[in-house]
Image (cartoon, rainbow, N blue to C red; front, side, top):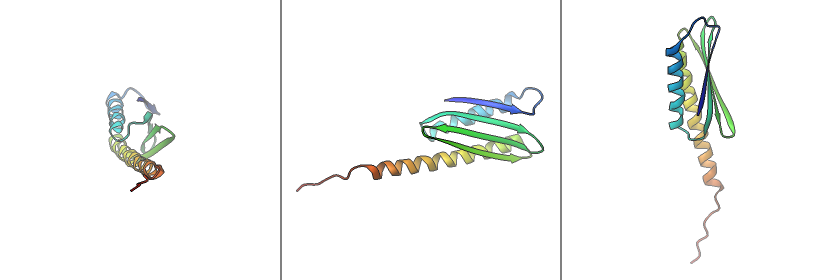
Length: 107
C-alpha cells in the first residue's frame, strides 16, 4: 500500500507527524486487504485539520477532522476511517454471501 503525506500551510519539517501518519495508515491493512493507497493531508489553518483518503478496490473513503491539536485530529480521523472500512467490509461480505447460488439438496 502506498501512503502519501502532505503538509499545507506549514513552515519547516515535521517528521514525527509524518511517521505517525504512515504508521496509522499501515494499521488500516489489518481491517481490509484490498487497500490500494492512502493520502494524509495536514492543514494548518485556524484549526488543525487532518484529512484521510483511502482508496479501496471499487471505492474511496474519506474522513476529515479538525481540532486544536494535530495529534488529536490525526487519531480521531483514523478512527473514522477504521469505522468506514469495517462497514464497507461487512456490507460487501454480506452481499457476497447472498449472491451465492443456493445449494440444492436431492434426497
